[in-house]
Length: 288
Image (cartoon, rainbow, N blue to C red; front, side, top):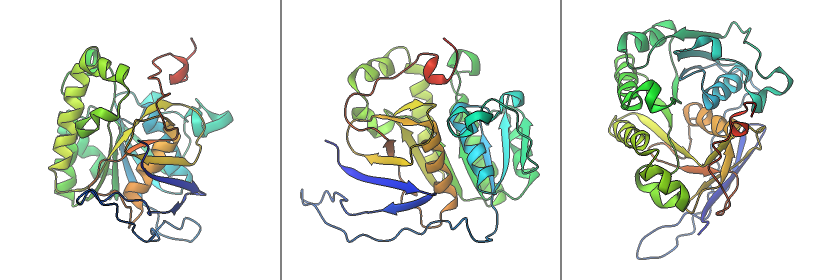
């Protein structure tokens, strides 16, 4: 089943046709008239926002950083490795891999599991929205880093009155287990069991936070240039560029009327069952 609606974004706008929302009321399908979604108008001189990005040197997080700066917003990032917060491959084009030289970017070296380090991000500026794109091998970062770090972020947000949070997890978490291709489920039950235990606990903490959250569950991640096509799907997930995931995350913390607040959308650019979890170095933009 490849239900759901397709959101095509052109010049950072949703041409969103929210027509085929499946209403599971007695099995009936309700056809909802399309409703225009409020979109940020980046052309006008509107107030720039300040976005906090946690895990700022990760492959998806660097896309969030780059695109937010391109939108004219300020970014405060936290990462254990500030030197790795570089211009990303997907959106960065010929500048990919270069260090940033942007007065609107502040990168703080620190550990998300230490609340004092997380507090530094919120002390830096008035934060309007938060993107959590934490990652790393469990053997390097520990078995509860995602959950512990995210709980620290939630506490700091509440202390500062920040409401919007977007958290990147994965296809296969929570109630989306059946949206993962079978071979990926095998990984979830075996090699990736510890990381999925942490991801599921991370999602539970976010869902219980009382914040205006969007839990983003992408399919197979690539470092390709952004396509502008993001499918929110009910069926089995395909692949998606990290650059497209980043745009969805940024919209979820900046667009006033974003339609997936309090939800856990699974997103991909390519539908169907052909997606393979590509763990090769090429998929991570590294030399083989």
